[in-house]
Image (cartoon, rainbow, N blue to C red; front, side):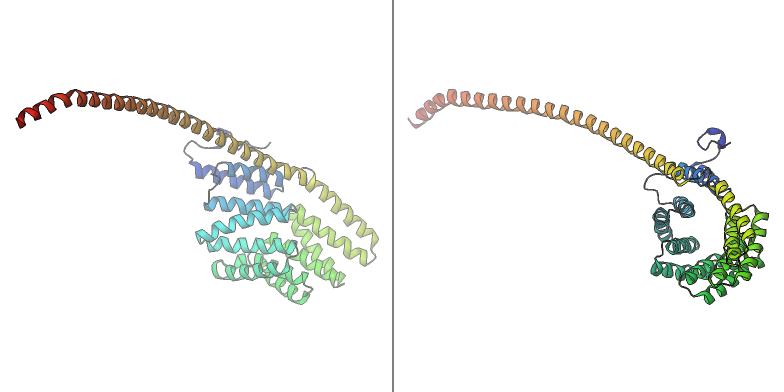
Length: 341
């Protein structure tokens, strides 16, 4: 059962807004770990709803980064780049170099997917520079893998294998089995490309064993895909058919509740609610403006009334002065004549 992330029961009374957003963001990460990207995206958007539209805090950047990773994993590279760029701009302003290393790496991986080699090369180099300067050795394999993937796309297989083996050594040194499955799967793909099918089978089987232990369905699926291809080229049709069957079964299990349509609907729902919130804000502003207009209109009418009264008073004053001047003129003239006599 999906926990309610908007219900009061999820939060402690002592939690402030930042704590609540962090909780929701971590819940999204948890959904990613159990391969439920639709729920992860819904959860990340729930976290964003607690932030102002112009919020540029680092927690907002973290959410944008997480959204980018989910969209990239779900095959929407353009959307992933959009969210990674949002996160990068905030991290640059915050001068958060550790996060910048992660963002550069994510941008590199996404541009490799879109086959934008110049940008991928640029971000790979930036990622390696930042990883080595600001992060510790256990994190290096992530950047090494992207650079190796780029070299593989460029058909520079010897360099790719060297980078993957360096990554694998570090992953084993620190017991990172999840990363080992990724590297081994990639080595299997290169071995197939180079028609070294025995090495491909060896790497894929090692990856499959670790992935199965970790219950990592995506890595298992990749391993079965490599085994299928290697055994097909070796004309071991029975094993190839079995590997293909397992690959299809895992694909169905992974995608049964996480179709691209589901993920698009999750984002569309958030955008719809965001627009509705903006419309409510505009309506409120419009009502405030209407109230202000009524006040201004009333004040204007008061000023017009006072102005009319002042004009009438001024006219009356001028009339009085005219009458007084006329009435006084005769006696004054008589007095002046008497003075001359």
